[in-house]
Image 1 (tube, rainbow, N blue to C red):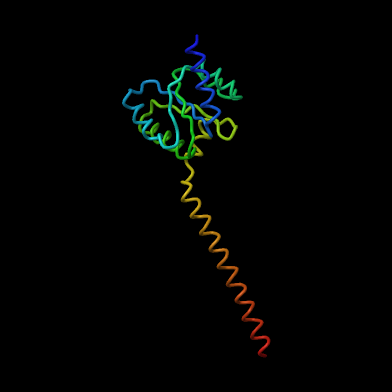
Image 2 (image 1 turned 30 degrees about the vertical axis):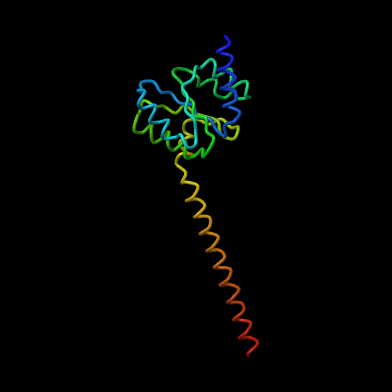
Length: 162
């Protein structure tokens, strides 16, 4: 009983400290495959095989009730502490290569996510690419503004000369 209380306390802390949580089913995966998955997401998340009952209690203690329906069968949780999109991509890519891994859903910024919504996040481009595109759009807009102002200046100069 003391060990279960400690496990619940540890899981509750993991839920509270995470920026996102992704719930998966790992039925049929080998220990080596799970180790590879852990290594793939290690930079941004911790991946833990969990007991459903203890996880449900811990999630509820952390104020999360939307995972209750998905906590069936062999479950594992990715507690994201870094880039959520990178973790979602890594899980999706691993699931494509290993169809026995099933993404059940998750929590991101306090909102419940379905498996399809997790896949949509995984389809986003990386943060660096999105920032580069935003910078490119701002540069193009500033260039157009400068050209417009210069054209107005030239027009005024020719009008003054005439």
